[in-house]
Image (cartoon, rainbow, N blue to C red; front, top):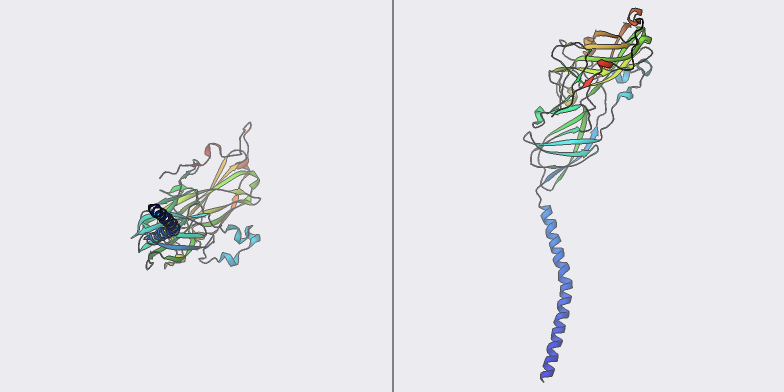
Length: 357
């Protein structure tokens, strides 16, 4: 009897072990599923809002304020097709996310756009390309103050064209867009946001027509005084401060030319950003164009031109042309035994000052 009871007890234990193994095989995956399900719920409960950004790049090199260059352009007259100056789309975008106009987060997107996580119910977004070389970004902590300027460049041979103007590098291609006060986006929601990246830098084709003696010139460079020193990223307007742009030129059979990038004229509201604005630059503003020629005899010939009238209806890119330039035989004469190197500007080379933040 005792032997039979021990046998039955052993059989019950075996049966219980079998049942335990079966239940364990079922229960463990169930526990895992419940835990994973719990994790997914926790993730869903993360308190974030998002904007799904889709960018559209407005690629233009000048704005029409009366010249209508796009429709009146002559490839033969200017030596280039109109589309030659259209900038490409940059490689990447920086995004500043403001809460009540205070910088809170910075993130990065490819040029095509992507997802931006928002930290508050009311967020404003400032977009700008981040692949520039000479651009300096200032006062970025407050969206209304955020602006771009450019680095300092000095030229020993250049006199003062306009008093109190900093001499600078022409800016790189720069685009920006501002989206104020994104509201009504629920937690866990990704809002589709179209962003139009508009240019803040424009191009001037600058041409110097040398009527006589172009063969005596070895190098050429120029300066354009009275231009905007900075641009506001939020609305594309330019402050009243002015600067002198320094640039190099290419010599041709008829003279010299350069493609000069600029923020445009100073103190100018830009109607292309939706602001009411006049269509002309301020008439009181003066613009001076400088040309330096390094002649083959080593001398430097300097010329100045008042181009204020040409800037009145070209505040955002266009064509600036001056002529009646002559290099006389007296300028080109060579002193006996005078040996020069005209491959560069020598002691008059431009100097780029380092960017400090």
